[in-house]
Length: 79
Image (tube, rainbow, N blue to C red; front, side, top):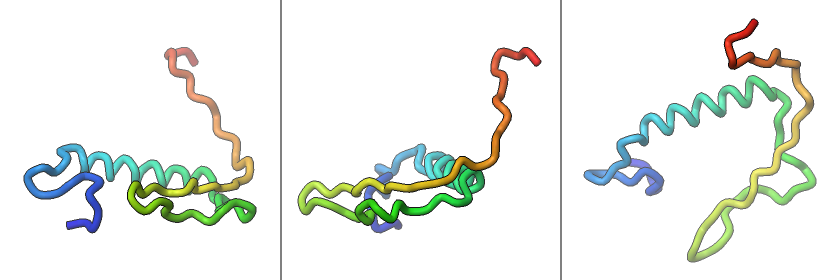
């Protein structure tokens, strides 16, 4: 079991947890491939937890360059 309750556990486990984790992994991989120079913003506060009773994450501020140009996809079927 995980040490957090994001998708719960036991008989109340989220039925979409495995799909959500797989989609999140695919998204992170695509981001890293698309923005290989992505890094934490040195002028921003460091990421971390805030709050004691109602915990939350501080923003994860990143900076990155323009990256390679990617051809736009045409979604209406025309070429």
